[in-house]
Length: 334
Image (cartoon, rainbow, N blue to C red; front, side, top):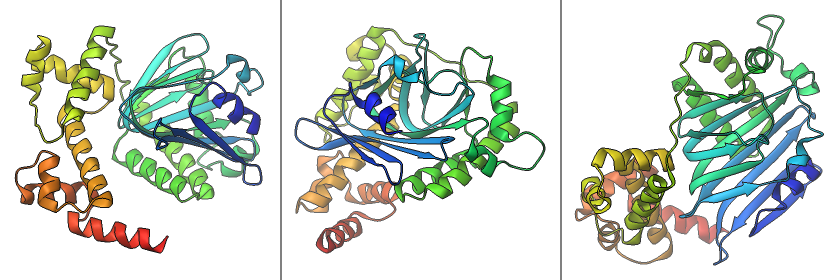
């Protein structure tokens, strides 16, 4: 496991790699030019039959993660990979140079070779993936007893001859389990991740079998550049509100096209993205400045402090003043 982590990260600039051999846990932290962490990958392996990765990136630039293709030569071929995207958009390239991507709320089921490169659009991505190796100790321990085949084995036998991964929209139950998996990863509860990974596999094998595969749409370099420039304009000054129609006119395209390019590139809608960056900037200002709530609401594009408070509470679960008090308490106890 340590060698795989080190090889995977050998070509990634501005990263710090740590490995806990006792717990079979690898961590890669991505550092920007100002020394701020803007991404991380958590690797975990159990019983040589289950490998789990959790991704979390938040930045205003794309990330490209590449690795040497020969590192896959010793990886067992009979395996199932399930990937879940919580938010953002991630494109992967296989060793035979086929590309595919998933966006927020989608699941990929794949029995092909591991990815040799990962491209994270906009540097804003959260999700996880896990590998289940057939005929492994982990699968023997975690096997469900509905019949002779476990859910991972069923999925492997269904998709092992497919040249492309199957991509489906996660339903409510799948999304709830995926959220629990991410929470357990944050809490380092890897035994619970194992249980929930099997539970998610069972749901996909039973309910996902009837779900329609999602159609993939790829965009030209020009269309992707429009999406990136739109993002840059939105982030340049959060006190200014831009309508999609106004920005579409700048690029000489329709409002519908701009929204389509934006969602296709970033994996989230134009208005949702705009709201997310406002809320995240507001939280940063509440934590690190003494600005009044009204001043912060104006800086992030809200003329009404009341409306800002409603949006902030919907996003973080508490009002701005309570959020500031909680972060102050936390920092004082560290």
